[in-house]
Each structure stands twice: as structure tokens, then as C-alpha cells.
Image 1 (cartoon, rainbow, N blue to C red):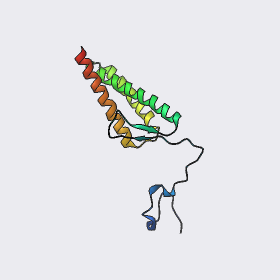
Image 2 (tube, rainbow, N blue to C red):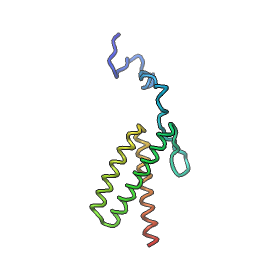
Image 3 (cartoon, helix red, strand yellow):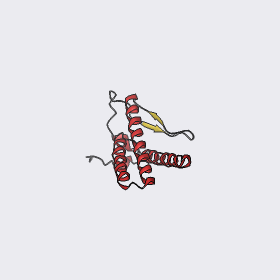
Image 4 (cartoon, one colour):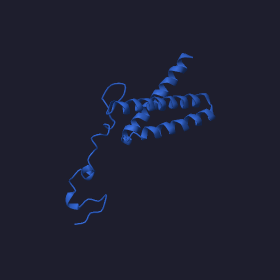
Length: 127
């Protein structure tokens, strides 16, 4: 029986999708993954320590860009808004490079936008 790459025989439908994937290299760093607790400030990171540090830095940069875009939008600074949104897209592309599931990235994005909106609300109330 000949096989075509990416297609599995019909008799093996019950197997997981990664069954035919090559085994993970033991020398490679542990992949990054997120665990979302029911309560708490955010997700817990698991995986290689260097990857975690790089991810935290990229996430902080993304959140700063989101906060800058929200501030520029509130102030009516159109040029600043688009500049910060461009930075947001660049930072999101960096986050996508960590090979996390799209659902996790979407939750992080929503969380960052919520934090930026809350910071703006606090800023307006203080003024």
C-alpha cells in the first residue's frame, strides 16, 4: 500500500492527528504552552525558561502598543492611533511566532484590550 504525505488511510481514522508526525527532538527546548486558570490575573506559562522570558517580553510590548492605541483613540490622535495599531500588528505577529494555539492568542488579545480600556477609564476618572 502506498501512502501520500499528509493523508492517512481510512482504516486508521481513530488515530490522533499527530500519530504520523515525526517524534520530537529531545535536544529541542520544551515548547511553550499556556494554562488558563479559572481565576487569577492571567495564564500560567509552561515550557522552556528562555522561551517564557521572550514571550513575556513580547506580550509586554504588545500590551504597551494596545494601551498606546487606546490612548491615541481617546485623544483623537488619528496618526498616533494608526501608528500604534501598526505596532500592535507587528507585536501580534511576534506572538504568533511562539506557535501557540490561535484560541490562546485571541484570549490574550482580548485580555490586553480589556486592560487598556480599564486603564483609560481609570485615567479619565482621575482627571
